[in-house]
Length: 270
Figure 1 (tube, rainbow, N blue to C red):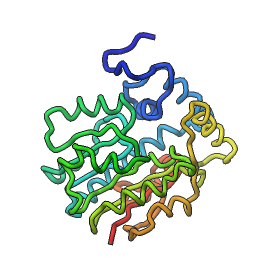
Figure 2: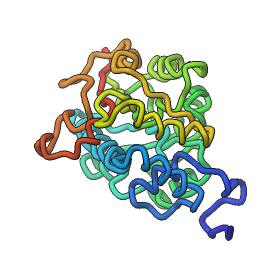
Figure 3: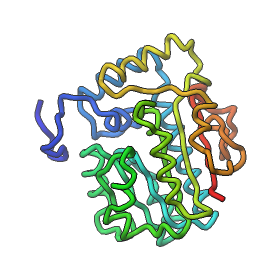
Figure 4: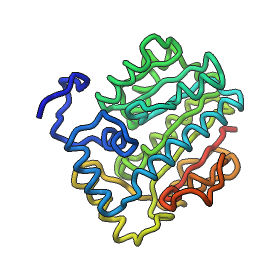
């Protein structure tokens, strides 16, 4: 397999990557055949996976606009993935010029492309780090340069926590990040769940098994389990709901049924 110029030498292009599979679902071009093969295999069980990812991106943009309208000018996007049109910095800086954004991802392709997209943007940067090591993120030069933790921050955990197994303590990682945030900060979160998927759980489980096979387990949590990530936050209306129902800009009834898979919510620190 020929290595494209945009692929860092450090990555194994024969192994599927969650962020590159996500890029494929969104119609991006920064993915390999091994990623597309895994994505197509998962779509044999859940053909609406691209619709779910599009709903995730749409929710992220609405939540960023909401945060910016609320006066927040600092954004920390962990598990940011490969940049696509309408990314956090574009939305935030359109609503609030001068807004500062730090992206965080552990995928070298996502980091390399973020660096390319952000070249020349002094108010945005990217950190190569892992959600499970919050202090590496918080003490990074990029966060220290751009984010004032004494002022409100919008922390984005969009479509990332369902790739963290309970054994790795995702609740502890979120709590550690939350403890570092100033009062008035927001937590923006989306998470996969069997609840809302317009398929029998057994069939949807086939797609989950594909992720398990590529050693990126997809953890489908219940609404109650997802709500636990918001401990210490006051939920912003309408609470923890299917993505199209969180402050929609168009009638939710017009959305594809797959868009209602999983949950989204925004919480505010007291």
